[in-house]
Image 1 (tube, helix red, strand yellow):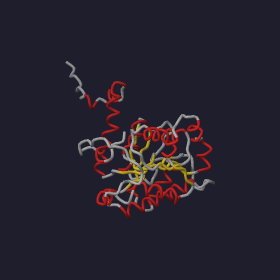
Image 2 (tube, rainbow, N blue to C red):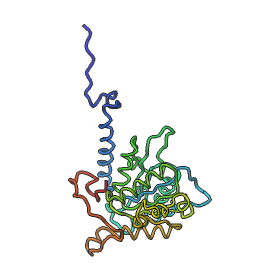
Image 3 (tube, rainbow, N blue to C red):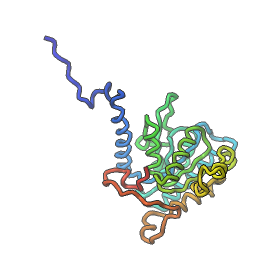
Image 4 (cartoon, rainbow, N blue to C red):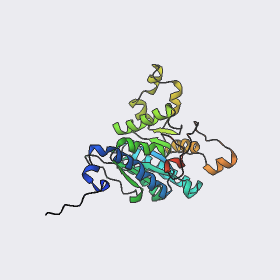
Length: 272
């Protein structure tokens, strides 16, 4: 009699794990694995940089150099002002262009401050070399990637970009507008681009957004102006604000009740 082959355990059955029926499991792993790894690495707070993957060094408007310069300045600031466990990490989509520029800038101070949330795409976007392997994450689902962008973010800087950048920007603005995410410094870099690409005032004039919504973000044209807004919004440090009773410079909303400490998402302001 022919001996039966060994029956696979469900969690060893790769055919099932990659099937439509196991989609929920795959979604859960894109929450659980980053959560546990971020916890181990002590990464609690991020400043997110969004922008085009197509912008290259030496671009005429100077966006690449500006992203690198701003990230370097923020990395130096948080290294000087905050304890290692309270530092703000520079978080991007991990790819080329503006993402690589920001990571190159932060790496001039400390490569460990970089976090890359990559997305698997048909044209194989790879993590840029300024992100350490254990600080690099690979996502299949855009919505899980965006969850992690927002969940740890304390500020956001958005450079010119295409559909992906606009998707990230407007999700962030929507979450903030609706109170699903705590207000934070949101900086749009490049006045010439943003005032031409999106007529925010026209939306307010048409009654489609409120005048107050125009205060959710600021449009700037210099590294110094962007740095001032972000650093002032974040404050000098969590511990100093706690001791002095000083409030965040950026408006806050009521925080949700924290989850048990074992979750990374519970150790920061719950946002989404």
